[in-house]
Image (cartoon, rainbow, N blue to C red; front, side, top):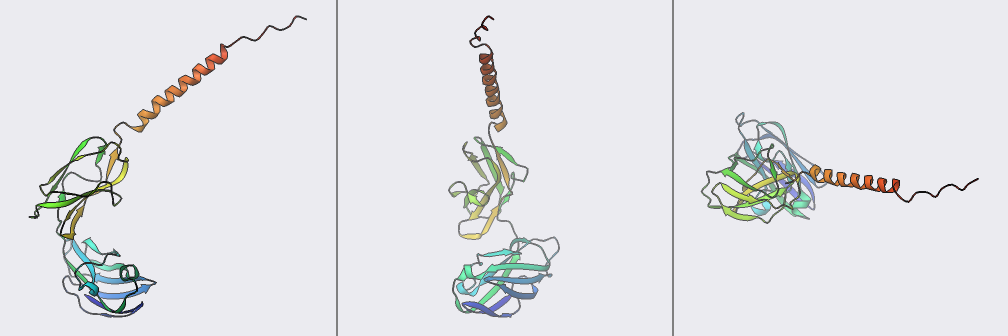
Length: 241
């Protein structure tokens, strides 16, 4: 599917034509400030099958997907009506002038790798070593490996062998909590990447075990202080009448 826009600092005209690749229809485009809203129906695929669809632009001859898109775009898109892609044209293009064509291209979604032992129930202790395992049918000998929290890398990305195993020595000082993921990416093609489900990092010694001894010590100190107050220098005797 192609959408042709005339862009003259502010964005105006569009023309819809038929898609190439996966079939989409009932296409429309509206604009709110710098945000374009591309609506489409995706009814020609197969039920239960995952697809990946991306929005491309003519500024680079449709070579890489547009970055500033959200909504029904990317991986694991199911067939159905009422799909929406939001594109921040101003952030993507700046003060672009001239003709511009949008294109949606898609294909069946085939995972680059499949994680074998990371799921939403996983909880790992800091300071331990955890073997991250995955499967792949790709012939890529090495991949780019990242460990992230809420999408932000916590360690420098590493190039590792694509052999299905990475032993992660978890630093004891990494912040505990939710939101950790592993990302494995093809070094030559950023679209060929997979991000694991989120998992949790736990403290090696639960915080409660650290708080309780401190509370006991504080209680002991209070008792000693109270005893000292009671057993201090006695008051002088009352004067005789």
